[in-house]
Image (cartoon, rainbow, N blue to C red; front, side, top):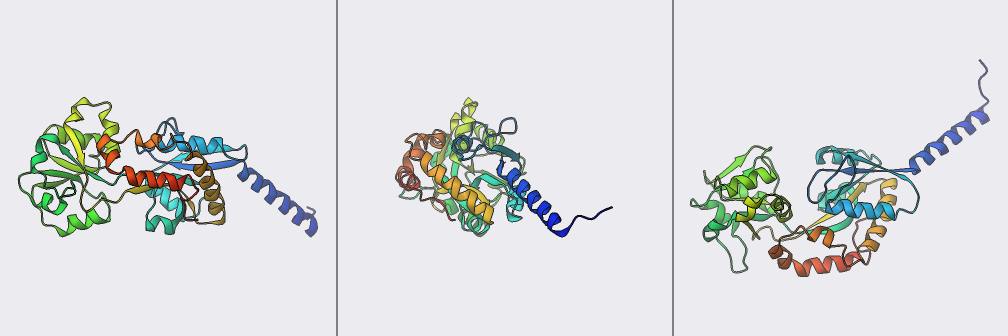
Length: 295
């Protein structure tokens, strides 16, 4: 068999490389996760969740006509992929120092911190400070009110430290990792426990289809009073930097629409929305000026 000449072989290699690059440029991959109402994949694609609606806007404003592809996975799998430099961006990252070291981030929404979710008939037993916040260490030390948390779940640096450093007994129990969200809320509504910790918007989402949960309410916590930020994340590669810059520019344009924030805030309970209004206003004002990334 005749071997191709070196110049011809090099030309073939160059053409093949350009073709591969062209193919890659014709598609964009996104990681999705099931985290209603923030992210609600439907039929393998972004659906009606708050960040799904933003992603639809990003795709519509994408400068080239390309195919957008979607992969649904749990957060552990997604971050392993991002660490490996896989050419795909994630829609539902939290902007934390650790994540900022792992990925390029573009901020999308500001989120209220984890709240105490408690049955209304037990409010008198909840110790509060002068700022209207739950005194968490005092709460979990009390014997006349019972809490239930999820075993192995991280509740954030401050709450995890308080749980580890404050003695508590049978008044605070830990359920299996499969008892999440609606199931835990139903336990409390039914009187099998008095309180838990979770996001306000998750409770609001579950309330829309479960009238029995109307007996629950949320309260801010003294050691968890800093709002969180939800972000898009792309791998820390040259490709990831290029993509996050593009995403960030589009999101800043979308955020100039006065109704942009409603895509998420419609899921907040009125008290929570009012409590963090000033911080939310400041975030969206900055976001519309293209101030929302770490690239």
